[in-house]
Length: 482
Image: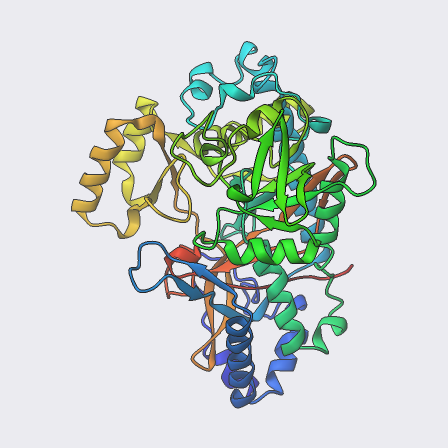
């Protein structure tokens, strides 16, 4: 089995392969799993793959594709071969993310109070004021412990030489953690002996750490504060995740219509009457949170919730207004933030980023468009991007015209190759491009990151787009103990 298995595996050129060295030697973290696979027949592996699909289906592990027009929910594709990280790689990633989040938290506190970073001309003021997610309503609002980002999903990729880069910071309502947890549960069923043999570190503490952090934010000093998870409802693409996290933490899952505000306090309607709510883990975006302050048409939020928040009668996680820190144009300033607030050199690199409202940057990008990826500064899910290397002339011209209408809303980055990991496809191993989204939790006692994260996979051959909405899947992420 083994030789035939590896013969079909052809590492891609100019790409960091997670399993093979350039000399085509198997990297040591992968040896145990390859030895294990060598003793399995294709039939056994197909059965494991089938079992994984059945488990995903029976547990309703789905996501929603809004533009496919073929029914609403899809099973989330899962690859049975784990992505493996060494203890030293993980230690570096963990330090880099903690450093980055400290700086981003300082930035949010600063931008909504003293604005020192603008007065010291590190970031131009128009960058902030032109950001649609900079909310003047958050100015001088006191947030508990000065923590704005309680939950972050930081997207990392590896270039052809193995260097880690941060692709983007998700600081508003980051999703995907339920897939990380479910992927691990399913892997335990598929490879029960392998996890302990390989000394794989656990990710299952995530809901407990999150719950402990939410408890600590309660404005009322009581032993059992009321915590709720506010969801936009069943039609949201991450609804499966909302139900999973509420269940694992043992908190109420609510929608806007289940809450009301009275005298600047938030209450949940229950069969026993009203119950005051202390902490809201919200998965509703800022603009829909309070129809009295933001979008008046919104039926997803709660009228008056911002007044309760300003008065300090309820804690909201993540804080309102965080979008200014994960805007893709602001992203290019994060290395300067780290130097400015922490007086440290950034550990994790940014992908070089060109701002298209800068005429020199724009000319350079337009002249080298076949080597560029252009994105909307506030887009997500892989929508609205131009991948220069495989776009037609017509697509390029149409996109350029779109950029010229409002250049501030676009950035460009060189096409980064993304590392490849082995995937089990059609009874053989093939390399497919991957990224990694570790989830960091910030509480009063510091930042904790469970060892692992969501590894997303571009399952289409040659594709660099890992988003589930664009045909991507995921795999379990193993961080080995040292």
